[in-house]
Length: 105
Image (cartoon, rainbow, N blue to C red; front, side, top):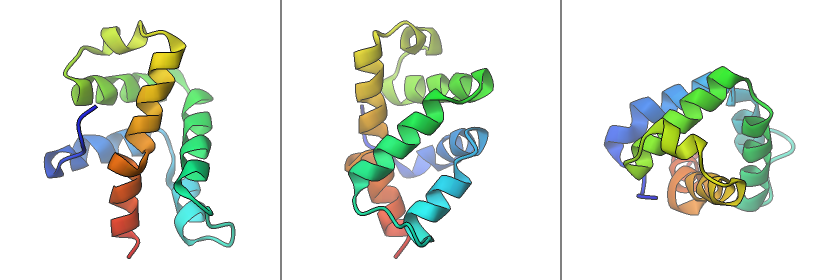
């Protein structure tokens, strides 16, 4: 997966809004239960996404497809282990983690 770029802010923000992740992000970066590390954040976000509605999953598939230069259908058909690896990469230090670490400063 490629690194997030400035042009990705709008589709990235839309995907986060569709997934209703604001409470998790707020708690993780600014709440009393601040995440001790990025791994805790990644796990929390992945679980939140996996238990989300079809609308959220459609938005997530579309965004990952955009990042991978594939179609949403390609992403939907991935084996679970490959899909989870893409989620880890998306929400890991290279992308999501670095974006929010910088934004939280």
